Amino acid sequence: MGENLSIVISNYSHAEFVADAITGALDQCNGEAEVIVVDDGSTDTSRHAIESFGSRVTAIFTSNEGQGAAFNRGFAASAGDVVIFLDADDVLWADTGQRALGAMAAEPMAVRVQFSLDVIDRAGRPTGDTVPPAPKGPFGG
Image 1 (tube, rainbow, N blue to C red):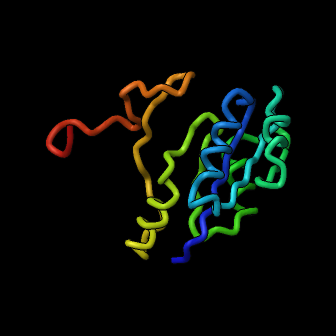
Image 2: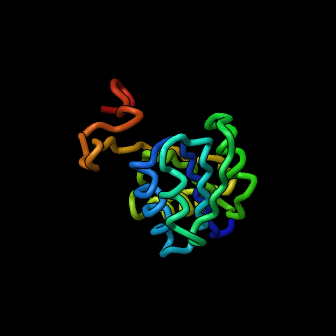
């Protein structure tokens, strides 16, 4: 497994959040991650927010075809050995890229890594919840 990381961000009318998602993606792997933002026909000011990052991101603007189509377009444009798919209203932890690369390298037969997300409010403050919730019963919690 190589060490190149691509991050594909799917956006649909999340102008108030997309810049934070992009900034967090650009900070991954010491700024070496490829960042692709696919705007799926937003009707707000998302385009302006995305274009403000200039050549630091690959921006793809499409008509509204749904999140699956947006992620597929971004994946097709990516060059990384490992690809992280990110919603525009989410933010990556600073070490997410390195952790994903490490997990994939540790398990060469793995095709996917999934991890829990910390839920934050509109101001970016942790709520204490995770998605998916921690398992209950004999295997967790």
